[in-house]
Length: 349
Image (cartoon, rainbow, N blue to C red; front, side):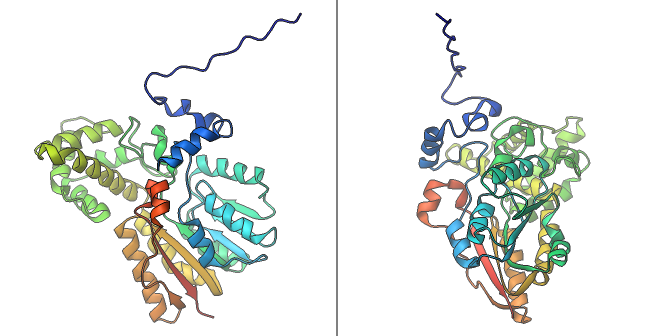
């Protein structure tokens, strides 16, 4: 009788959930833990390491994709929007997508290829979406374009990327960890005035001056702020004067805004978006459609201003005068959808 293979017990984690990102179920084998993933989503949360695409129906309805068309996804991310658009092409036409993140884009490309969307219908380019004009010139323009300006959940959830104040990790915040300088390096030599301006301009931070003083004072003492935890602790100490009943909520929101401001800065997000909006009309074919998802007021103002100017100049035949927001049902299922605004434009014929 053959010896029965000893059953290997699942590693036990203390606490309700695994402590380390690498140990979490979804990264190891998402298919195996479908029930767990569904349970997490039903509670209005995003499973760590995954990304739930926002406003897919509204985007697909507006873009009105037809088989045989050529499309562009400015921010590939987890590939949820890309997949939905590819399905509408029904095997005819082609999609191009860009992403600056070499880690996640490779995973997404593989995931989409396994779903039947290989290089015959999808071309993924590891470059910034502000190079849209180069790609459009190469392929003859686009019938539809989507730009989802949000950071992917996979990036936020991975502590090694430094996007979240909730877990300890290097204070990096770069979308492409192989290019530019990290947020920690950016803080090394920043002046109090410049940091205060950054916090205000990039995230409307009401305590920008207090935070800028505390952060730069700490660095001048020779204490580098090179981890997410160190930055969070300084924010907590700086806002310790707040009334107890308000403190927790305000500190959480201040952390979110501070990390957002740094992320925008190290990735030059406003400069990139401005360049993209300038090039957008030239990349669209006559009658082509573009949809853009924004996630904070700075982005939304820039997009709104560019679309309005294009409409007044006769470049766009129509554009969204008002924003479209995700439904209450979607926000209940995906908390990260709450701040989303969708704007759109149609290229004049």
